[in-house]
Image (cartoon, rainbow, N blue to C red):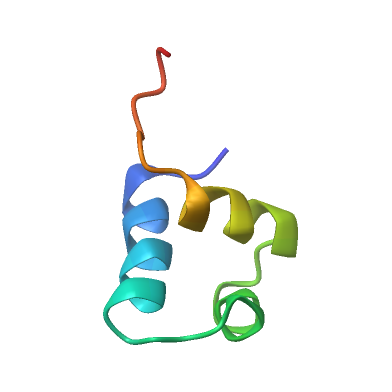
Length: 48
């Protein structure tokens, strides 16, 4: 599980810097499916 800081960084790189998922994977070292999951997720509330 990623920290909120890591999740926000991933979302920022995609939305504001326009980086591709593969580029984010290269930068962060996280798995592709993990990066994809958090980029596509709108609700970050962990309780629901």
